Length: 280
Ligand code: PAF
Image 1 (tube, rainbow, N blue to C red):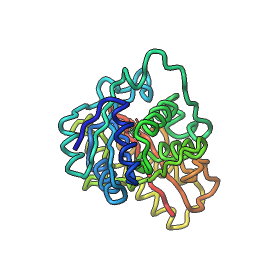
Image 2: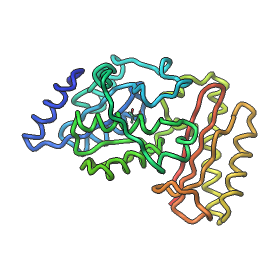
Image 3: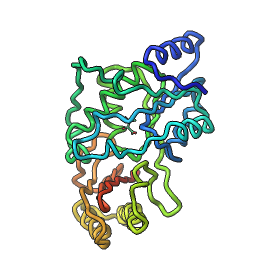
Image 4: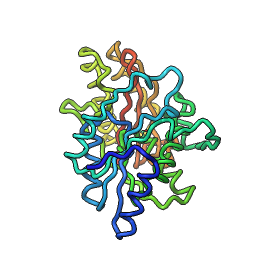
């Protein structure tokens, strides 16, 4: 496996493989790889000749009071895990190269980025959009793989790729969970042992939500209230949002007609966690 830091070298690597008729799959990550990322690498391995994993903690998607400095970074461990899962290349550019001081282009995502996480993390999806756009231009993949845990991110990137005619197939892969249901996330390491126990309630609430929909509950407001009660039964959990929306448009639903995306964000202590379920 190759580790590439230079932008031009990354472009040359794909150009060479494309000229030989090979397909390229990209898994964009910020490192701190866990089983969720590894499942994306394995999926890409199945479908592409060349598998590139980018590792770049992207400063433009973190708000001023967020965890950019704290975000776990360990290239050596990540490289080993990526290689074992089938990666051919780690692309690890520097912030200086990705964002030179004279950069003056920005991307503003519209309505798709306004609700859910976008409401509480202003500018976050614009930061995701610009870095993914740059990664697509540098790696030039046929396909790019994203985890469904960041349900809004998947839709933002799909919309950007479609709006800007990028010609990259966006592949969303299922959420990978711990044995007790907690969705895997690089931020789970922030949880103290007692907070880690509280965190189980997120997936429990979503499963309960699915049951209520199966039982033919019709009113999204009633469902939202039931989920809030489950989450707030633990005083360690502070709900940021519970949204019941269409899984693609992300528009709030007026009644519980499938397909339904239930998405939520909570704080447990100072750690922000998100989770979701799609009911079809
Ligand atoms: O999901 C992530 O880890 C990041 O948002 C991404 C897509 C790598 C962009 O920095």
